[in-house]
Figure (cartoon, rainbow, N blue to C red):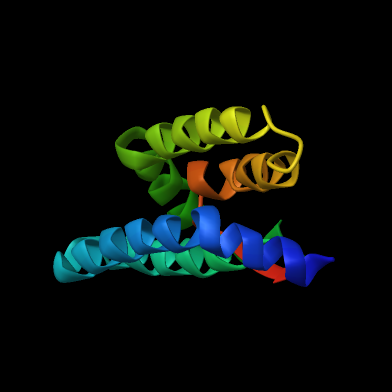
Length: 123
């Protein structure tokens, strides 16, 4: 079932979301100071391609740098990304076949809000 949901997700939403996160990651990596944000964007892009069967957990070794970076990320991009995931998820939940896709969008909100200090693992 995960495979079917992931393929539907990839075709309908995941590919375009991953491209957006990849583009943001490239821009962040070009600007040398924001490389940690670029790496986080690449991690989210990977998660956006294939979200079913994976989950996000907190890294225990994340320190104060992750907290400060997450505050900056939240103010610059995180709030807007999470609002986008919320609206897209709500619209996808309007149809019966879109409910799992909407739930996947809701599942991406925490990592889009604060991606530093997080790890994506198999569920």
